[in-house]
Length: 438
Image 1 (cartoon, one colour):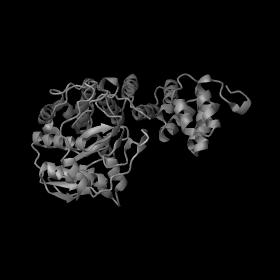
Image 2: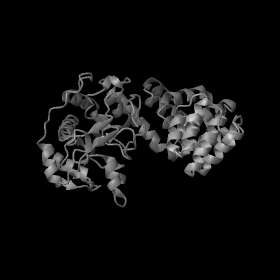
Image 3: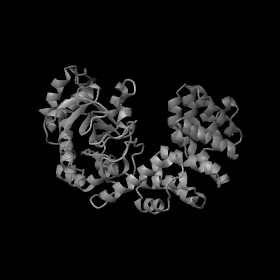
Image 4: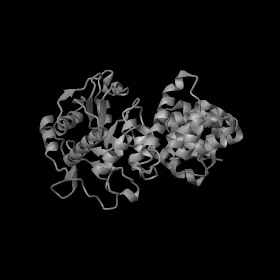
């Protein structure tokens, strides 16, 4: 299994990861391990154990050491897989849990742990297939619920509806919230289906089905080159902020929602955008209060809001809906979603710099350098948004048409299921895949 020198694994696939650890580069070793496809589990576990020891993850180190010693036993396979999921490396858990399930096909605990690992990796079709393979032994809660959940996220609404019809209401109150969310997901799918294809390129449709979010605009760049309507890195602009607010105005009109105020979340970006929204929507702006009804709560980036939160914070207060309240986020990170899911989002990105942030610019020598943040008063920057160009970027000419009229037609069709239930975090990118960049 190992060479004698430093117990180095003999599998060539593991050489690069081991060399990273020789140099003290644990993140690099984990990136290399993600590329491993056929190395023996015992050898992989030995590398993972060394990495875990260097990172101070004693639980994973012990589990990996046990698996390296006995890679043919169910208990070490399961325990190692569980520890990998808990430590945020589910891709390392999957081969071990699959093998454990092969050796003990009746183990509900191992099946659920494997499904959890697949979910964390966004491999919802694999989760569905694993559950269907063991369908005869599924408990309704949580197993059949998980089958419906993953079928939706894999884009298989027919299977989701068929299995949901077999799922009784939970006897345990612990599952009531999940049950109610799943009912709402399928209700949203029923209203979106007649006006949206809900195929593997329908980003707006699936954002609505999964989380109840109306996506205002899709990226006009790289649609057929892996992005499917999402942005990768974005240096945002006043123009895009204004365009997002104008689309929000169209969404509210199409949904026949008539707010009486704009609520300003406490972080600087949200105050700037909220003051601009007040002008665009023709509504008074007030500091956010959790109990205020009939208001549009404006966030530039809910992750930034969370970082600025004090005490219980606005984010926790936004999880449960107040009547007539609409939560709008301008720039939402799809690879690390915020703790609450907005009702309306202007655009989806992996990484973004706000127009007033320290963005990139051309330096005096012709090179690229990072500029200074705009420290002007919030109201002055907001005025720049209101006076920006409302005409969208035409992009690279490869993206599908994305008119305001088409957005309004979509919202008119789904308005009966919009603004319902809690705002649970949306952890998956769902059936529409986009390229990710480190």
